[in-house]
Length: 178
Image (cartoon, rainbow, N blue to C red; front, side, top):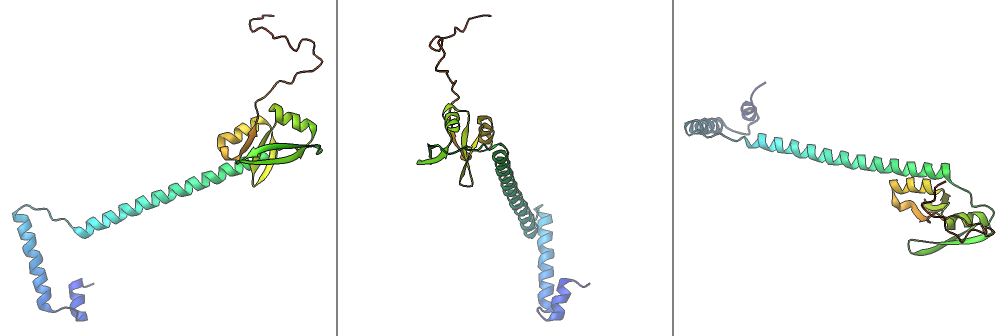
């Protein structure tokens, strides 16, 4: 293979004079640099290294975005699986249960038993794909750990009091030992 200079001469893009002047100018600059102990910076080499560094940074950021999206998809799949495997039925519709979601009042029909479970905190409401589902509070907490966006209603657990219990109004002391 011939040098670039020879190829340019054969193509007629330069003359022998211009090639010799360029060669002598390069030799003179190198001599001056050696004499004054100046390190010459190869601009094209520095630009190439900078381009490689920029490309590596761009690839790293792209990988980070891909990983974040994959992680988000995995979380959504986990939430969907939790809802599908632990979803409870609403029972035979008897009562409208009203709740607030995103500043709007929503309602759906549930059985009396499910209504009691919802108000006592034994069931929770979650929203997935614009569909409301009933799940146990433990499952709702697992969903909340992954993303709070899917939780709609979790009431505090309340003890159900038997209305016929004659001792219901008496408190049990904390220091009572059996």
